[in-house]
Structure formats: C-alpha cells, structure tokens
Length: 283
Image 1 (cartoon, rainbow, N blue to C red):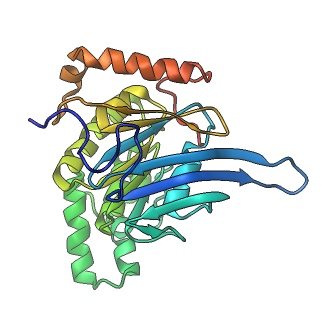
Image 2 (spheres, rainbow, N blue to C red):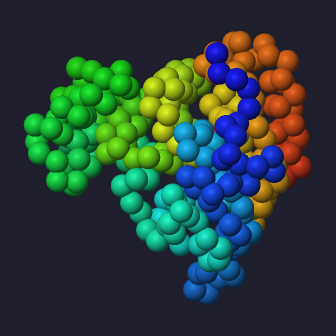
C-alpha cells in the first residue's frame, strides 16, 4: 500500500516545485487582447509545479483560466508574462513529450478507431505495421480491443473519450495534459473512466496535469490539487491529497480525511462563487 503524502524532493510544503520538477511555472500571467474590446486578464502571477510521475489537478471557479494555464503548459497559448519550463527547458510551443486530451474528443470522423489512434504515429514517421501494433496495444489498454474497425459515429461518448486517451498515450508523451476529459459524460460513464484512468496511471506512472470542475474527481485522482481563484486566476491554495493508493472510491469516501479535504476545497471555491461537479467551464 502506498504511503500518504507527496513524493519528497519534487515540491515544497508550500506547493512550489524544486529543480527536479517536470513542469515549473513562475509568475505566469495571461491577458487576452481583442480589437475594439477591453483586455481580458485570465491569469495573474501563477506559480505552480508538477513533479515527475505526479498526478496534479487544478480546480477553480467557472471561466477562471484553468484551461488557459493548461494550454500555456502545452505550448498552445503564449503567456503574457512569466515562464514555464518543461524538464528544465522553456516551453516555446507544442511538443510530442506533452500530450493533450480535450473534453470534446476531437476525433476524425472519417477515420476508424484504429486510424484515429495511429494518426499521431504516422505523423511521427512510424511504419504501418509498427503503428498498427502500437495502436492496438493502447486500444487494449483502454478496454477497446476488437473495436478498431468502428467509426466515431458508432461509438458512445465514453468510448470516444477512451479512443482519445489511447491516441494520446500511443504517441508516448511524458506528460499528459487533460482538459475536463470527462466533463461531458454522464455520471456513471464518468466514474468508470475515472477508474480506468487511475488504472492506466498506476501502470504507466505518467506525469499528469488535469483540469476539472469536480472536487470529488480531483480528490479521487490526484496527489495534489491547485485551487485557482476567480479570474484573473491566482493560486488560492495547494493541497496534498494524502489518501492511500491504490484508491478505491468507497474506501476513499469512508476515510475521515476525505470529508475534511472536500469541505476545505468547497469552501475555497464557494468564496469565489463556484460549485462542485459542474459539466466543465471552458476556462
């Protein structure tokens, strides 16, 4: 049974990353400027870090800038100020070492399940036989073996998201960036995929930065949780989950530490007019 607490040597007690961090963000701010409109300040002086193999979640009020920060780490959006380093090097754009999973699935409707998962491998120059074998391996990992000839229109929402996760994993990223990946799913499917993601993470120990609107989801999945304030977002708190792994939902909820942590996060969010378990905030 894994011990409680975060790994030593990756973050300080205040949540600041050390030199061994996989992701290190310092004083990150973002202002969106639009012609003829007032500037929108999305992020204000964000300091954050993710250690190697950690599962870190971000929660915050709707539209506060959670997704914006994730996209800055991914290199899809440029910060207005501050720095983001990945493995000690500045992030200057997207890279194959940082794979992203979106809420909207983003599958190619004209490609089969296998074709969708193998797409990134083809872009990397991998030969057909090898990429087919690799794609089938990751389809099996997300429990979609035998579904490789189906098209996205033939899949449920949960199955589409499994394909999206398999496609990202297949390219071999060191860091998974997940933007409300289960936010559009029904409660039962969401719970199943949370458990599947936890199983995959236990097996691969990928570093994960996960944006969610659900306090329960963040606690269930994470080693640590960053709580963002209302826009422009600042870090209100960095909380160590500290619950034993591997995690079982029923056992987690029976742990006396769970309601204490849940209440603390809820109170931090309530101060900003937020709630728990919403369908996604796009921000």
